[in-house]
Image 1 (cartoon, rainbow, N blue to C red):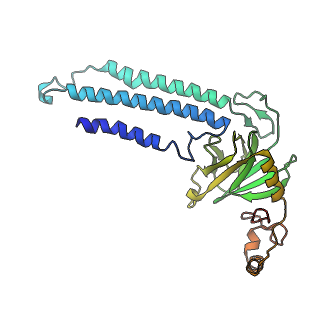
Image 2: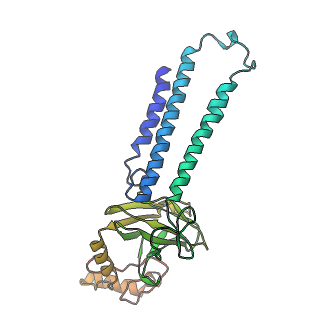
Image 3: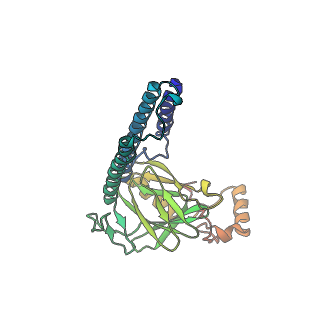
Length: 299
């Protein structure tokens, strides 16, 4: 019995820590905002494990000190134990939750929030020290894919991709979030926290990657039958590589060079595919489904 009591907390700690190396993990931080969230997450996890350990120690002590049968003890309704209830059931939880609440508010205050009016504010409603800038990317949630529109300074659309967001590393990028149908949620745990996409209410997030890399994200709000497959990828590149990628994306689609590719283009343009999808440089100009343009350099 003692072995069973001791194995439960050890197994629980092992399962918790085994997920810390996942690519899609709050603890796998690669941006300023994610580092703040990771620090708070580590504090909460360690605190949880410490409290759990103390509780199991008290249970083991109570179990080992128990003697005789229930009939040999005083009646169970005799009273007593109110001090333990007040300390363990009220004072300690209240203290822990208060500390976490205050730390959470401080973390929110450090996150700049892009208001609908275009003015940048920090978490306390004061004007942020960072320079005010308009969104560079407009991210649209669909059932069940992500539409990524890259904008210029006037919020005019330059080009559109799907399910993969490219950003330059080492600087913040303002992203406008909107949904075309139901509620979705943008969550890339390695870069920032979760932000909801609510119909009729545009939302905003400032994302920054401290290094180049690919960071997995996911829709974190149940949005229908294919919700689990509504993933995305944020690719942070060095500034020169990002500018080269942007220049390549502005180019029209690559011309087919083989008989198979020529036949594929004919089937695509003559069929219903071109009504929903777009390939820049061709007659396919749909805006319902992802842009399928693939330049020669990307091909």
